[in-house]
Image (cartoon, rainbow over all chains, first blue to last red; front, side):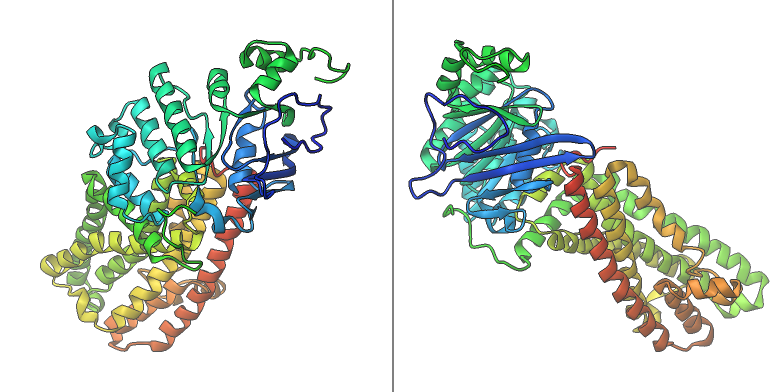
Length: 274
Length: 274
């Protein structure tokens, strides 16, 4: 992990995750990113680099700035200042050079409800210029267990089925970079576990980079090589899950999360450090 | 990049435009109320105005001589109005479906998105207006297609205006969310009194005539009356309309891009609500 000036005093990380490939190119490079909405600083001078092939969790309570940060990485929100580089392309200036290699899933968007799953995947497959699209859809349907309702309209699916379809859309182009905002929100534990398993497999088989924002600490603990904790737009901590838990002297990330959310001091951290 | 994805052209991609047209086609074909709505209002309009024209022409020698000016005006107005609605409703479908974020994160470029909306406006227009012209022919003996080649000039000018208004209205909704939806339905009616659809420009006060002549539809409706009453095709009027349309079209596209940038600064692309 390479820590940049975040405006936060940070204790040294015990178990640092890699931020960049050996050749030095990170999948995501965020430097001094700021987003101000009128008088609110939604994101306040954050910097981090995310290594290719890693899974990084962005943790934080409501209003911590996770979604805004991801939206700026995607180029859907323009930063007030700072820079974002994704897969070597400057965002937003060069985003069309890399959009075909990225994909995302978010609870803030839906797939068209009246269209069938197959129709939706066909359209997004064409938008992403996927070769052998029919075969790709069949493969995704098999991988994500969609076959049974491939020709059913999206609006008639259960929440779990919809999430699997959204995941299929996010994987249709076999992205090098996958941005996920609450990928298992509102799913039952079984489906959520199933989704996590699939993401893990996808990362391993494709050496893909995954950045996920989540409230689910177990999910982050299980999936992520690295955790970035945000609070009020700033990076509060940045390390491997084990490193963070060790530093806070806690057994779970959930306990760490509560410590951070309630402003409790870390063990051994200097006074004034959150 | 993944081998699954074809090389993506740097310019405009016909494949992506085609994908979007397919998306709206699937939607239209999956919903009979949407199809019915396309035919319902134009049919109602032509029947109402057709009977009115029949009644007036019995009482007035002028209208007997200028047969079809009312029906012709109704059909041309519908091309203008339905052309804009056809464009804007397809855009609104994305807002209603909360699908805009998915599209904005895909390699689809704004120009490709707008081009697909224009194609859909033509398709929707054909579904609504062709039955309307057939009703005019069989019920009221008005052969719209007998206008001949000038019809192409009328049609092109009206459809360009409808697209300009559609692009502008869509930009407003993109920037301000669905709270601005009513603009889509009402904006064209602001043009109605000044475009002199049912009466000649001379009816307006002199100062208002200057304003009316800044609107391309005014030239078209004047041209239609000249053709139906005096049997003279005014190519000069069509040329002027085309020049103003070109300016309007470029301006509306520039405004759309500016509003898109503003939406990205404002962070409204992922929300799209009220």
